[in-house]
Length: 400
Image (cartoon, rainbow, N blue to C red; front, side, top):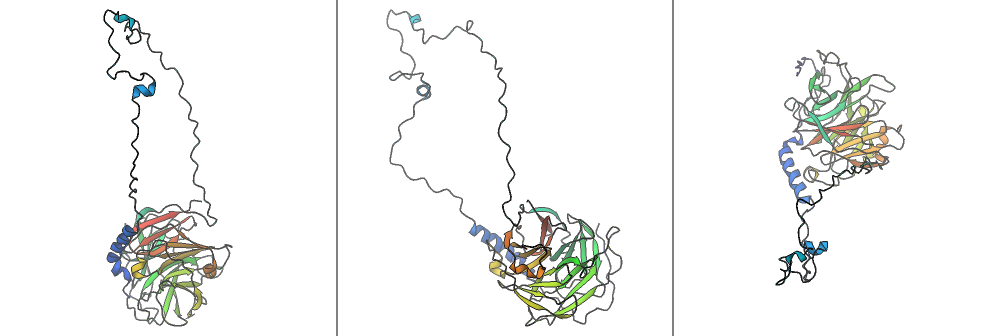
């Protein structure tokens, strides 16, 4: 059952006027058609090539009798020749049929069936040193009417099997879903109204903190003109009795860019609680780090090193851009409109901010109309992804 929670009318914690930036979801219908068109045009042909013409006339194959040795060359196809005049027909014993009442009955088949000695088929062996994943599977769906432009997803640590889901735009709440997408309720953020909320993360609330927090990234800037962006966080509530009835208190960090404003939609938070932002620049995503969870200036750590998709489709229209991300110790996922890439650290204790130098590879991803949210399972055994304009919840499981 969907729980409806009223938003308390309280003064905002930030003086910034909340003006919503329209997202590229307005292109979703056109983009979806483009995905299909490109996919069809780039699919390999399956028509078999024509067989080469043969100039040799094949010899006719022998009939069934010739193949079994029951006929001799020159024999009439109509059967044995009739007996000569005055000849006893019974002398043709090789062609006479046995008497029905003297024919010996066929021996019953008493042979035991041969045992099945075929070896069982072995499961595919994962040979990728970075690990392997199975094909995507749709495990459920969420209320598309309540969250029409899903832009952030994160797995709860305090509530196993629960997803946190964020809607794009001027968000004031975060939705809690079951493992298969049913609505638990919405957690209302006290005094915080995002201008363009784009991603979620669940991580410790600070260095060495035992408590986990939900981080909300108000970092969208389609026109690249915001003076600052904001990250809000609140402690994960215990959902055993449902979502909190009252709005929850949030802490907010206001961050400015080291140079010019830029659009971004991907948030990563390490075990130290420090936010990292991956920019949404076409083919040139950068990694920016906050100095701490506090007001300040972001530090440009350089290119994120995102490889292009093997099969570009929607990115040919809207650009090869990073739309979501998630991290856990030793691993980072980045989502684009056309593919998912995973970075795996040689040392699982490596700081999350060093992921651009880790080995990276493309991993399985479902075809979605406008993918803008991705998250690891809390135990790291796979990841889930959702899209604007869909409502489907997809899961990709580890297979190694």
